Image (cartoon, rainbow over all chains, first blue to last red; front, side, top):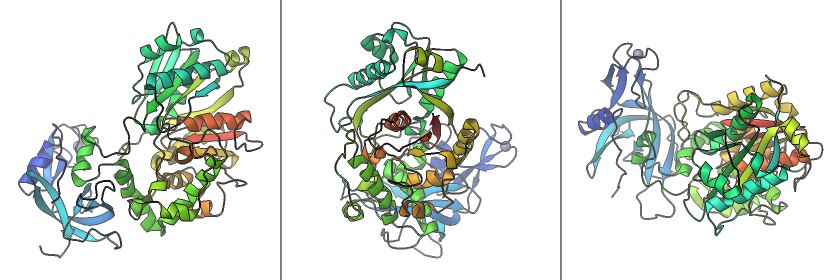
Length: 135
Length: 378
Ligand SMILES: [Zn+2]
């Protein structure tokens, strides 16, 4: 059973976690110039606007880099594959790859992935599966 | 510029250990007393301090302990170990602008026997951790490994390549009596026999040596240092670089995951200020929380090309009789992890000619903490 450390919502990123509970991967979007940004910030660095909107990501992208996370002093903790995803919309996000054996002797770089949502004991996280793989 | 040139006039440090058995304030005080004394100064002449924002030793507690009657300048660096060399930048700026005459730089902690940085975080220290810890990035080793993996993938490296750095660091440490790994060199096989921290990226011997200890520097003008008979080392350049999209821990949002852009810009700043090039550096002290960060910095500063650090190290450039001796005290893996400050002490010793692993004729030393750095010279 995977346990996760829940995020601590703040003003600037609550929308993201609330979106996740509704199965939406939201990317912050400037309401004035449409620039996308992640991680969220309370102002658009391009135009200075605080009209902060969101756009729903299609949830597709590629794995730029990845590791198998397993703390050596906590052997019972479930290993998880951590990935850095380049979304097709252009922003990047850290997440996990699920439904793949958490072994290090495979090549996951540059593989296409698709978002899904998993409820870990009340914390809903966007997670990813290899593209074209049904659960 | 006014013409006043800042120098490092004094160095001081405690022993580096796994359990100091005393308070961090005592460690800070012992290192500070020794640095002031080493410069030929009295505590009553100190009028400024610089430390890390993370340091737990309050300025007023320290000056009451060591006998400094008055401060007119106090500053602290941003971030963590990446700000190690920025302490010297802040002190030099204050001295050269006349804000203070004699600045005590200090850093002390019980980072092994008390709060260990390498353990899993228990609460998100800042909102940026929301984009890491829920996904199981909860230790520095994992956080950094996520970019190291891409570097390994791109250039076809294995953990053995990183091990070759550790072997060199432990070789330097083996002949440095201040090093915790004094007289304990290792082979590549020893490295490969150490346990995985993040397989297949980092082993235990790729990680810095969490340590207890204190380091201090006394920074003043060249004129004052000369008046006091100090064996002073000029600060030829100092800078600290923060880039939009960067983060102290999460280097995930810059376009190229296989370079250290802060280091690249830092190198340009430092070489410009000092009026020298990478070829003029005789000894490089390079902050390493984990061995691969040395590779990224060697490339960022132009000591070798992109993806070439592995061959540069394999070819013997950074060791004894190499073209660019690196971390001649054993570095943070071999001497101890005093948040990078012990590397500055070694830089001063190389230029004074008093290092345990003296490089003869050293004239220019780079002391890099990745995003902050200094060039010391003769
Ligand atoms: Zn905008």
